[in-house]
Length: 335
Ligand SMILES: NC(=O)c1ccc[n+]([C@@H]2O[C@H](COP(=O)([O-])OP(=O)(O)OC[C@H]3O[C@@H](n4cnc5c(N)ncnc54)[C@H](OP(=O)(O)O)[C@@H]3O)[C@@H](O)[C@H]2O)c1
Ligand SMILES: [Zn+2]
Ligand SMILES: [Zn+2]
Image (tube, rainbow, N blue to C red; front, side, top):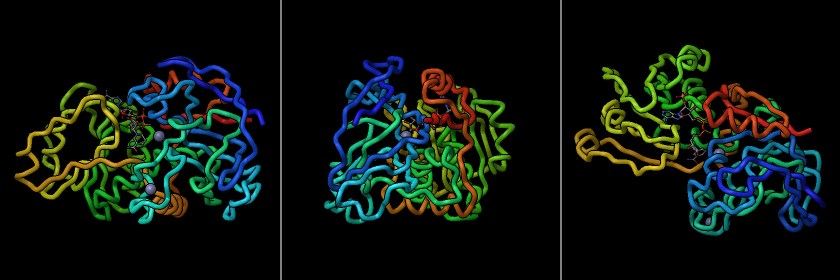
């Protein structure tokens, strides 16, 4: 069949129509009719080849919600008509130690949907059904996609940083990922402070569930604070004054960095050593934690706040993401 996509043909390019030919699905593959697809900042990193592994033409889109329309003969857990979501990961070996303990995202053979193949800025998508997740009934179609990449990234990073309840948690950057981190952390019973460059986001933060908001202009260091945090999560795609944020951590506190700045992190050892603090990072989440996150989101009413654009207006939407004007996640809708 023919699939109509929108693709970047070179580094940083505008997206243009691009037609793909795909065969009928075999084995574990299935074909989805795309209903909606979120725009994650990682789509921009890949269009711009920031990570040096982009293959053009790049068809972005890895927060996909679609309806199953065709299945390979090995697919048993899905049927035609099911509503599923697909995130960053397109496949894994499913046999290595990481895969066997449910950390498919850590597999050496893990493949990014939009790195090794084509993503969801399209009318149809062919995917490995083992990385397509049924969307719980309570979650709206247009809002579900961002949970599959942004949502699981922050949920998993917070959980592996030790998030339980009753903790002080700081969220740095209130974009697509950050505004979901605020919701997960606060709805699960933590006290949340946001650090944002945007005045309007500081004002809105309490509606997301944050208890406090601090404006830190881009390029500035955060102010002195008496409060100590158990966990800080950075969702910012730029370098920050890491030392200043580490000083906010309580003893045994953790800074988890999921945003991807260009520069290496420079951290004085003493700021960690004297208080047994940790710095960690984390890539999306495996299949078990994606399923858990979707359950938690449905049970606690956690949904991204979205701005929708018809697929044809993709370049307008991308410009808004690039200029940090989206509140809080752009989602393309496909008719
Ligand atoms: N680790 C993973 O598995 C994973 C998964 C998905 C995405 N990511 C990465 O996470 C990052 C964020 O993605 P996203 O989709 O949430 O992006 P986004 O929606 O564009 O949000 C990023 C936010 O960071 C803040 N920010 C941007 N530039 C800044 C600067 N120069 N200084 C300070 N703050 C700045 C802004 O928040 P305020 O307006 O509040 O300041 C902005 O809304 C990207 O690097 C993306 O590639 C990682
Ligand atoms: Zn993403
Ligand atoms: Zn593996």
